[in-house]
Amino acid sequence: MRVFIFTKKSLVFTFSIIFIITIVLLSSLSLATEFHNANTASDNFMENVSNLIKGKEKIAYLTFDDGPSLVTSKILDILNKENVKASFFVIGKSVEAHPEIVKRAYDEGHYIANHTYSHNNSILYKSSESFLNEIKKTDIAIGKAIGVDGYSSSIFRFPNGFMSPQYKAKKKEMAKLLSQMNYAYIDWNCLNNDSIKKYTSSQLLNNLKKSSKNKNTLVILMHDTKDVSNSSLALEDSIEYLKSEGYSFRNFYSIVNNLK
Image (tube, rainbow, N blue to C red):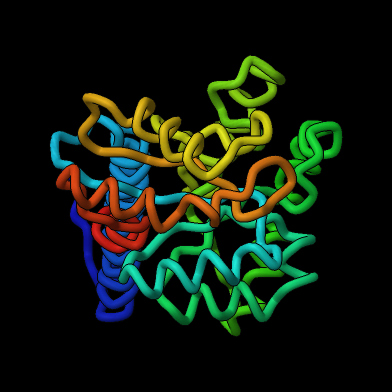
């Protein structure tokens, strides 16, 4: 039978090793738990954004793409008058051209989301690096405009929407990159067709009425430009119509703050 004799020095050494191993194991467990919780929160955020239009409440999310432009200021005036908060999917290069408009939108409580830097599909889908650069440059431009360092839009809209068949395989690939960045992407389930062809204000309103029929939660696509039709001309009537149909208005702060 072997007899082990422990000296004071060896006991101190042994307990030191045990202590270090215990700390390392506890730290690893803590990090694993934090990582799991972060992933779960991220997954919940993206799932809730993607399921937004399945909501049963009559909620309208007004979203405006492709700005900012001079039309954005008119839209902000109307939103302020109607006490409605919207979400703006901005283009980075336009943010750099009109930072004061983005700052005003942000200061007035509207959500500023990411719609790429160039809105140019050939640049956007050139590579993973190019895609990420388009998003990061836009967030940097927004951050500078609104005075928030390290701004992350958190919500992204693909040019022409994810549902569009254009670049479908690339979009699926880039959607994985968005997930890794804790970004969610969103399309729409209601629109007034202001980017399709030239419509009068009454035609834009009628298009909205048809598109919103028999739907509860609405994510409404409009544009804060006048490249084709000018939605600002029909916006006040559109808001009044939606209010008359029992819709309340929210922007994406309600989901980013509550679910992320």
